[in-house]
Length: 176
Image (cartoon, rainbow, N blue to C red):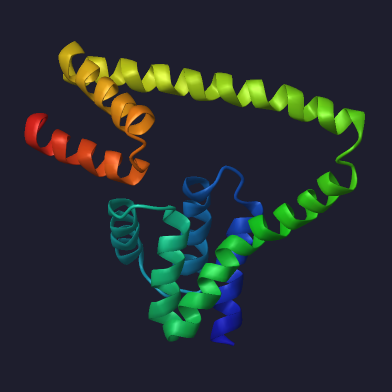
């Protein structure tokens, strides 16, 4: 019964939590603290803080930890699967529909419209990041980071993970 409860505790927030991991946190909190009473509010807050401190999606980190505490390794696996299952199911269904109609002129037009829209959204996000960097760190630091990032990614073709680690080290040494 515990495994079924673990599954439901993370599957339901995944189904109804529109907006990704942060939007599901109150729903997970309701299931874990109020419905199943596996934790109290303070313990949940500590799990949330720990999840925020680690890289990656917050909902899966919390699910893995809480599932492990309640059901061991099998519980962690079930909680992780329940967290990603709603997205996985929808992706399979939507991809099936898209593949069925991939030659449709409407689907081709949709793809033609979505690509530039995503490019604009990413561009706006980049400008906001640059503006925030300028406000927080100054023009010199911003230019150094932009220039180094461009050089390392585009000219030297270094893997983005290494560039991110380098930027973190740079920030720790020069921006602390």
